[in-house]
Amino acid sequence: MEVIEKSAEGLERKFMVKVPASELDAKLVARLETMKGNVQLKGFRKGKAPISFLKKMYGRGVMGEIVQQVISETSAKAFAERDLTPAQPPHPHFHGDIEAVMAGKADLEYEVHAEVLPAFDAMDVAGLTLTRLVADVADEEVDERLKQLADQNKDYEAIDGKAAEEGDLVVIDFVGKIDGEEFEGGRGDGHSLVLGSDAFIAGFEEQLVGSKPGDEKVVKVRFPAEYRVGDLADKDAEFDVHVHEVKVAKDIEVNDEFAKKFGLDDLAALKDSLRERIESEHKSASRNHLKRALLDKLDEAHAFDLPKSMVDQEFDQIWAQLEGAELDDEDKDKSEEELKAEYRKIAERRVRLGLVLAEIGKKAGVQVPNEQLQRAVQQQAMREAQILQMQGQDVTPQQVLQYFANNPETVAQIRAPLFEERVVDFIVERATVTDKPVPKERLYEDPDGKDS
Image (cartoon, rainbow, N blue to C red; front, side):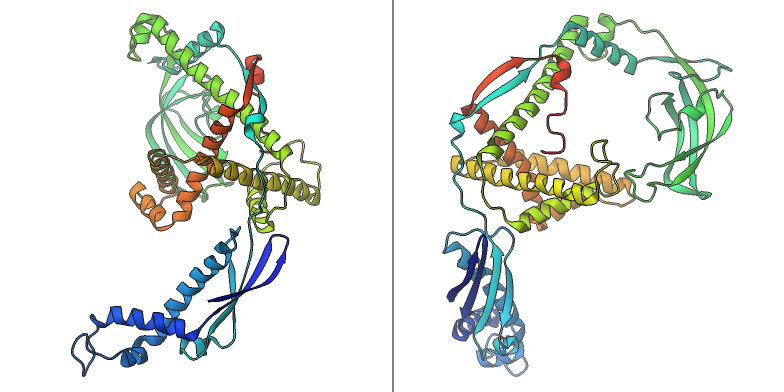
């Protein structure tokens, strides 16, 4: 193999690669030799057909496979020998007569082009200083969470002839229709619904206020544009509803007996359990702020050229999410040109930080434990199967897992955020971190906004 560097401008690299016809022929003969024992051709005993005859019969097809393999291997070698890592898969372009190459009469010549990942020195994270926002769990928070738990576990009793009010539970049958036709998943029998719980589509529950047992109602709603089932999104629907019962919530005593419903000994144990859960939520919110502060410092400390292809890909993903979504107040008055410029900077930040974290993690030998990755893959397969099932597709988690196995890039996408979190943990452990007590409300302010 002969490799000539044609150009090196910024992060772009272009090579001319030449593989002699003799090398391709040697690979072809070796491949045909492995096939020979399994080939039965008329006029020859099994495994006795000469290579020259096999070339005539199978040479072109096998050579096509060899050329693809050689291009993949030599392209990778051209970059690896120069200690370069392509930012995206390299693009080969043939030179000369490809038919002559396939016939074994010409050398394989092709040009390969790709952007490469930038070389840079990552900062010494041991010198970082960070502030971590923290908040204690107040007794009032525990009491509020206890009240929510009691509200969620109310008992209801039916009241004959009562008109339903917000907070009451109605038992209903319903059939959903679009343009007069019943749609899949739009039917329910004996369904219990608490009015005001926002468990159904916006506007549905309000139209049942005032209904009584035995009533027949027609409820008109519009599915939101972002509704998870694409066939229903942004469409008007009518639900024929039959009201079976109207039930009123009974007063509930929050005491030791209530705690035992959750497998705990007494009310004190239930409060301790709730406090631990809130503390965990506070720690998660605190970490979000700490991570944002860390990423800001890493971003400020690094400046290097970015592969345009990676930035373009990240920007396209951001912009695709924005299209059709409702803009926040900050962006509503901006032109598309202004928004694209702003979100391209966000894409650049994300790519830069991704490269920095990858470099720090690589040098530190950070790894994602296999059991953690497999658990995440299993969970993702469950989620995707559920989404597809809600869209009417008969897909099991095992089928999604098989898809993952056949497409390693999907597993790499699942691994990426796990790796990032472990690198963040690695940096935080080595940085100087000072805790700063703040009100709970400050802890739950969005630390990222749209810049993350």
